[in-house]
Image (cartoon, rainbow over all chains, first blue to last red; front, top):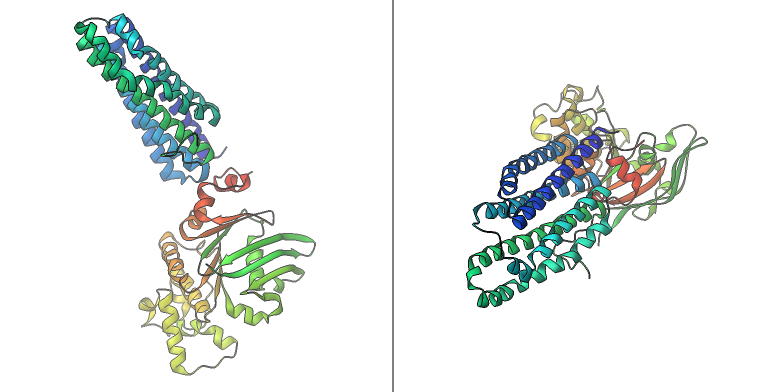
Length: 221
Length: 252
């Protein structure tokens, strides 16, 4: 096996580990948010340092491979994709940390009715699912799975779009939920960002495998 | 629209029964740098030597098919005339060791019995050495032997010797493989300047060099022209798996 191939395999493993870590962060933040588990939330905040460390390591390894092996063709696309995926994953890690920090600061669990009416939990499930799909697409080099991520973003967009009106209506009858509603809006916006990051990641997977640039294009045209 | 200077159609070359260039079809645009790459024994140097009819100088060598220079069949032209129009620079700098720098530059004229007035010779020497960015370095030592120059300077002197004949095409066979990185860089810079006036076809094993200097790249494998495209495409998204495997170092 050529040395560059060994290096790229190692890099792929590191990227997958980063993905698994970020996925776990996002899942634990969701669990902490749903069950109001402050210990779990603290664990997410602590582990954010590992996400940052992993990001720096992947960046440095990409830099070394560029400098030492002068990659071309699919190797070049792979490295460019990993660099961008790495940055997107790190930002998803930040979002998980942000949600966990809310749980730590919050005084009481979210009202069940508020969670129900806002559809934040199905939105959260979908965001996690999108991220899992991108990881599987990357591992299996499956562009069909990567393309599926674009469609899954529809639910996230719909929940985000309707959230203002839905919460406004809820607050008319439950003004005591105002503080929580403001937090919820913030979490919904963050989850919408997770959807966008997952789409960016899917675009990079397709770029790496098919040399097609889908950025700023209509994905289903 | 860019015009074609060299055109091959169904071109084949052999050494005895060994078929080394197989059915090559290629259009080489004027004032471009073309890199020709491929593993050892793939036929790239043989193909290069067919362009200016040097292949036929080897006993047992033969060729068939079309090779055109500006729509004129190279194999219907006088070989000396072909080599005036299509100059060649080799892997190792090969200035004539007993000739001065000055005489090395105009060696093509002398060897072909072309007599020129002194003023014209002076003009050609200065012009050619300037073209290869060597004039300022040697203008005060034109009567010294060419072999006293450094390897990089000798190679530029050889390019000046080719340029002095005012060819249309310059062929380079691994032109920097015997040079250090600084001399290589100087010669590579020269390629960019030379393509304003000439078409350059460069056989190279150095893929980074091919990527750096050429506009288009041809990949040969087992005598076949596998892929020929813009260099940017060849090095980012080659169409053929054999090209991809070769440039990414996965060739077995």
